[in-house]
Length: 345
Length: 295
Image (cartoon, rainbow over the protein chains, first blue to last red):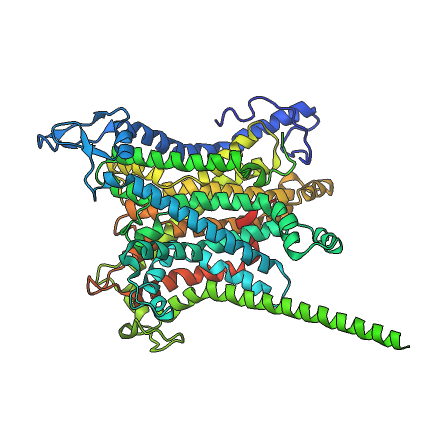
């Protein structure tokens, strides 16, 4: 990819682009862009190469591995079997929840084994994603609206929301584990005696609440940044025209903040789909809190190649969700990330 | 005359109503602000309170600090139960510094190109870098686990540093790109016109302007490396594990009992410096965090 960048000069209007100082002086516009392309190639090469090594190589390697059999003991013969090409067997095994059977072939995985958990882990992952992203969006929006107002102590609030964000997730998980301890403060405050990590929905809610606490600030700050881009005159004009607060919110705030909001929701969704740290530490994946990421990690020590197939499936799921967001819901990440005016086609 | 008084009374009442409504709105804002403050700070406060509480009173639920002691901080660093928190702190700092330095060194050039130059495939490159930052860590871990096992790198520092670059570098590039876009590059031209050499213009004009942007990016990069858990939990050894792994695996004297007070003390130690750093550079950090999403 690096060599492609700028190999062909493009006659993009140099709108907003100030003349580059590295280029040779006194050459025509075409040459200038050509030299910009060359410069860009050199400047981008280290990043592209580094990312190729740390990301592209592992992805390709994972895909190659996913089509290989895992070497191991054959349950039928008790003999060591070597790996070898497996075709799409690893994928089929996960999706159909089939495990290798004694004497070759496959049978439905017995409950409790990793192979039997694919669909429940997928379900758990989506449940976590939908609930946390919804909660975070609603609460983040509300927080952002408050922080956008002028009042004494506003900067204190803006500083405070950074605290949960700055605490490492591993620490957050331990902190909430303590809060949700049977003898902990949560049961004390709500006057309940729930064994939070002991059954399905309390355990899930513990994860959801901890995640919401940790990441709502990020959402709020992204939405706040979007809110601050709306000129105050628009609201003034709407007020003069007699629009109610609700109308102003629905007709002005929502549509104008939508681009930033969509990007924030996209970021959070992709982040939630790969959730690992919180459930891994908080519940250990017990009681149906195993996410796809946790399942991959558990599988690694039982067979690389099956784990590679599962991680590829996870990757495809996340990619598809991102695609749907960008394609159908109009989350324009690249443009939002601020290629304002420059080099836009 | 009487109609005039009535009118004035009417106006007064209207004004008072408006003032009341204003006050009521202000009041609601303050209540909401208080709710946000409590929601964000209460759990963190609880961590600090428990960190300073005697072990025997771990489950004391009084809100104010009680049975205050510094013992937990000593216990946190105690290695007799197999915890290596002190070593883990050093590991995290080392890994964070190396990852941040490499990412900045490589990323600053890419950010400059993306912010300042016109070239083909710019959107493709931007999309690729953004996509890379959203990449799920589990998709990398399996091949890396096998690769590092094969070449004997399991548990080494490089086995932790290299995967971290996969998400810190994209973050660095896109944060810096949006910072660079905002910089007044015309000043460089002006400096040249005023007789500076290119080197001088860069050193005396561009560097001081870019320094805060680079520094903020460095903080964000360091924090994301510092917080990394997934990869480290699988690829590190006892000797190289970072603090996140040490805290997650923190063991107590009794295997059945989680040593919460010591964990909270350890959590406080890894959190407080970050929180202070973040609060000092609050404005810049918020700008950097949101840089990717708006504008």
